[in-house]
Amino acid sequence: MKKPRLNWATEPWSDDELLECAMVVPETADAATFTFRAPSGAWFDYQPGQFLTLDLPLPGGNIQRTYTISSSPSRPLSISVTVKAQRMSLATRWMLDHLRPGMRIKAYGPSGIFTSLRHPAKKHLFISAGSGVTPMMSMTTWAWDSGEMPDIVFVHAARSPSDIIFRRRLEQFADRVPGLQLRFTVEQNDPFTAWTGYLGRLNQIMLGLMAPDYLEREVFCCGPEPFMQSVRDMLVSLGFDMDHYHQESFGAPVRTEADAPVIDDVAPEEGAKAQITFAASGVTAPCAETDTVLAVAKRSGLNIPSGCTFGLCGTCKIRKISGEVHMVHNGGISDDDIAEGYILACCSHPMGRIEVEV
Ligand code: FES
Image (cartoon, rainbow, N blue to C red; front, side, top):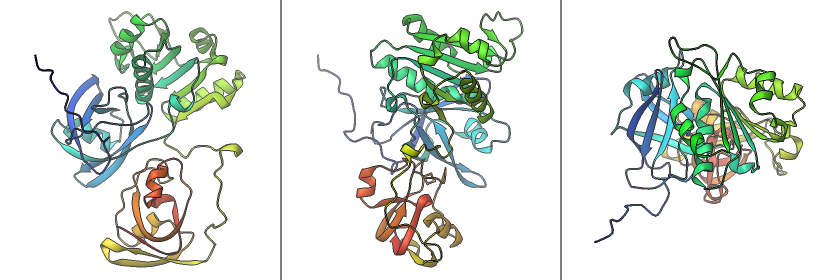
């Protein structure tokens, strides 16, 4: 019998291609997973824990939003994000109400440095709240698929048991490997349902019971900022070595002296004049060397899509045609892209006259 052939493209997906929504799966009452594939059949190359920036066509105009990827690169034919409706969030609400299979949208990335691959360790402690579970799901699936016995204590905080995203999938993983220990805590029980997990906000005593050896573990934390702040405070007061703490904040990474980028001799000079030519738009704008390319584009009425605005997400990647820029990014662009002439507009300063392909 003829062996069926898998129809894979040889090249990984690049963000020049739109993503097609393939599936929408409800996870809880207010959260859903959106799975995308590349119409060309390209596969997805990323690290577990990274994020994707989606360009969402809202009625009032496109807006870019960054979502952590919930799928794992060990299953590379599609890529998923899991979003939870937040009060006041137009973008997430739009996704839940309008994004349906067959629709194609622009996306940027994947990007980000929050990944267990950068911090290999024998023992992990994942701590998440709400939709902060998504990178943990990606890293856990990666660990499971890689075939090595993981040693993960997976702590997750939710409002109630029915709000725990991926509960059943995680329990199926944990049923089969002793090295994955699930520890859920909820603020309130669901009526008429037995709950045998923890009740109340995560605190020091709970953490000690959930992971008695937490001091030996590499900690990854993701959730709302007040939650992550309370975890940081808790760990510091427990004497945890914070070099082994990592969090997804979608904020500029806090640098230690050792992490600080080596700035080359040429740095933007206060008051020095510069000029940017936006070739495709036929606009030339005088500016200062201390301006970013993104700021000058905005001032000139030009739209360069952007997300984080500090060189992390890669959304504002554009091609430089000529001239020099001073760019200090946070991992949102690869060395290969830089070698090919790309820059991140949000963190690139023109050194004299430059021309870009916008
Ligand atoms: S906007 Fe995120 S890297 Fe520029």
